[in-house]
Image (tube, rainbow, N blue to C red):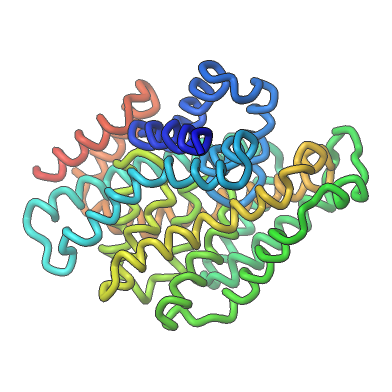
Length: 382
């Protein structure tokens, strides 16, 4: 019991101070669990980071879940998740319940305007960073452009699934990775099949459930989106946009996304805000259900490959598939950068100038995200 409480407490403290998104979270984890506590080695931690980049789900939360799993088993993994997520959950739930977006006061309109401008800056930075990381070859650039083209022609959740499948197949077929070959048989022997079957079953069921089926529809919507998020928290934006656009207003949707930039902990708690707004008759139930649903797929996959991931990340086909998918999600995010992020935030040349200046400051000086939040909220009042 003491061990589980220690895991919870360590992650809870980090959940209270971890501003800055997944990259900052990874740095906090490294300092706490590798350097200070020595719960795992630098090499093992580096491999966990690599794994989080090529699996769907919330990258930093998956790393935390895996650390808790290695330290204290499944109970430790759950304790790590609850501890790291709880501070952000409480803040996002409070915003959802006590902020009236249907008849907003003047100060809220100003705050919302500032946060929307900040969202343009943050998403633009994410697009450029991901492009530089995942689109280094002509083929990967082609996959990115193809994903944009197909989504421009018909943007829907099922089009996004089709794009990811096409990108995965292209990556597997063209993979020329020189990594040491690991047989599929070796990997299969180490896979834990119960969580894998649960992951697949829930995903297939979620595809056939209407989002208007109250609790079940809410869970299904956030679960299927959590199953397809490659590349970090920002990528959930375009997926959620196409899935819940008819359930939440654009103002509710974008306020929840923008607010997630300014709270500590995982960005995926934007689902907390959206779930509470969605199920306004029972906001706490909606918040809990949406939060669990969007995190669950990534955690089920960690449980699936907990004993095989060191072999899996060396397999050329898996590496190729991951490269194709990552290139496609750059296209997803680039399209979302324009609509709804840019179109809903920038309405004048002054707005455009503020976004441009904010982006230059972010790239040149890398100020703490909390400072950026304060500056843009202040700008919203002018």
